[in-house]
Length: 480
Image (cartoon, rainbow, N blue to C red; front, side, top):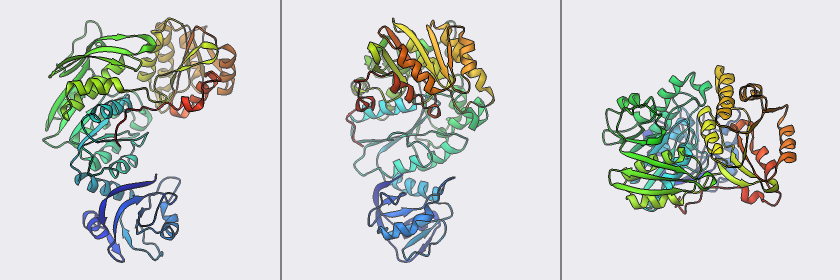
């Protein structure tokens, strides 16, 4: 959490908006900091509180560094102008909303159980071809990251793409209230972070909070293939609904209930070379070649195309933007492994559905296939079942072997069968990986953030493959 540039604001102006008390003189400021380590003279300092920190402990440091005003929940004895608020977290969101409402940018909000970061980058890549575009950086998608992102909105931005994550009900509603989106995208709902929501039903309801923030002129972009889409359509009755789909994601013999406006069809996967598909839109069709692995990314691309074209992009800008997208670190990135092997790094996070999508990618390779898995976190009482399902799915996809570590490794390996190996520690797994890697083998590494499976990836990489190269980030030439 650091410094955010914003348009000029005054403490009295904000006090009226937030029903806050001004102590001292009225102060103008154009940048706000939540971290005294990055604060510069003239910045406003906002004291956030968390489970393990309290920014009020640093008010004296902020004043000494030249803070123009302190935004606090309790008045400080420091001799500085202050804005006293009831809740500093809410105040951060209020200031962010104030800045957003002064912007002329088309603001897009998106959420979903998986795919949202990739889709965010796809949308950003497309809209950059239409004008100055500001998008959520790294993982700043929670109830602190979203306001901080909105505070970076500047007068010259034509578009803003705001990613929203959540671990429990109400968090997306909080972020949406600050964001006031013109377009909202919901990629889908599945069993991810079940622990915080209580059930899949709770996830469906919570993800739908993003739709409640749309005005009558807003646009809801929804996944026609998601089994819960009708609930979200009903929830979006106050605004216009646009649907996207991947026709080949529909199981044989099933029927799509709703006609999609944007469709990824004739999807062809090319192993480690990416995905090609036809994108059908209300403005015509085009062939798109993605430099991303997995059929599911064609569906992500259809979602991004729907949002971008509703925001004003042309079909050609959509094609160019999608084809410019490169893999994001930790999300199905193909790397050079030891002894001529191939490593697929999918360690950014994991849920049952994303694990199965990754297994589908691994199954496309002609080489010998090894799935290396750590725990999927926050799955609640059904964790053992979900881990067993991943093992069984991998076996059904003809993966040659499975290596696992973690609390639920036994469930995964048992479901896969006798050729699977379970390791008592991640260190033991890494040692085994380094001893066994050889040409003609593809290793897919998957696990939740808390499992730290990126350590295993590093153990598999060719010694000549530099850490700098491993820091793969998505580069689209966008403006931020």
